[in-house]
Image 1 (tube, rainbow, N blue to C red):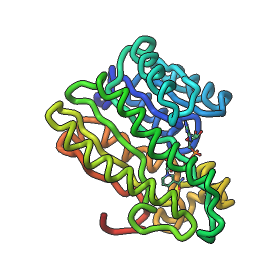
Image 2 (cartoon, rainbow, N blue to C red; image 1 turned 45 degrees about the vertical axis):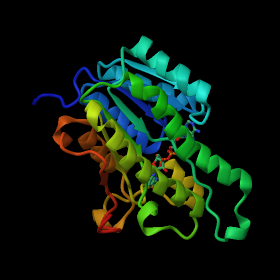
Image 3 (cartoon, rainbow, N blue to C red; image 1 turned 135 degrees about the horizontal axis):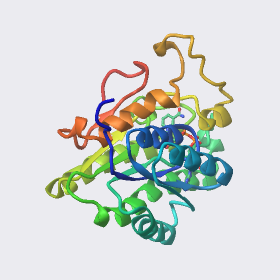
Image 4 (cartoon, rainbow, N blue to C red; image 1 turned 180 degrees about the vertical axis):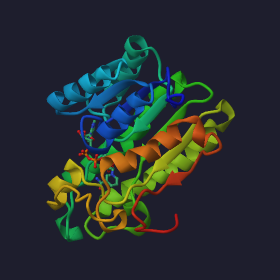
Length: 250
Ligand code: NAD
């Protein structure tokens, strides 16, 4: 077996009890990382991911909370450093969406929840984690193809994902002198609880060719791995687009 890509690295990821985040956490553990999982509501699933990571021989802790709560973020960063051992890689992956066919039907509460979870939470957690990062560390933010091609039923969501891309580029410039890389992944449709709950879409049919179906979370997780490890040492302020050819530029 070749050298592991994330051996002895400490990794904090949000929304890792489910969907894309869960697959990223398990893949990173397979590559040697020790992992702190932030989950919001599903302890049972977070416990399962933690057990899977421990089964791979890595250290793992789970932390419950809402990333849009600054006090939670501050305490979570301290807890990861003291209990896990440090932070080398941060993946801001938590996100919500509330589709609406008409702008008139958008509910104020849902617009605020979308901005709180997707944008405010990402900025707050990054603010408190950043001082713990060292040269060679990486931040990866989960954007979306919706930021580039738009989505008729996800107006507020696509706006938050566009903001994630802008934040990623700006922080990459600020973090450059410290040797910290900041990138984003902008998946197209992925078969996860998010798409199943909001659009009623069924699990992916892997017998179909990749470009004719929703991606599986595993397929998308490899873009995160690339941005986390030294294979992407020359990349910062960039966005990877695992989207089945949905958009061809960005
Ligand atoms: P998911 O619903 O399986 O996972 C989202 C996770 O974020 C959940 O664990 C949820 O509890 C957590 N979360 C939401 N708000 C939170 C908050 N305020 N504090 C803490 N945790 C919170 O969905 P997924 O598809 O795996 O989504 C992961 C990310 O990928 C999201 O940012 C989503 O926008 C993005 N994305 C998904 C798709 C897709 O088609 N599934 C496409 C592009 C981008």
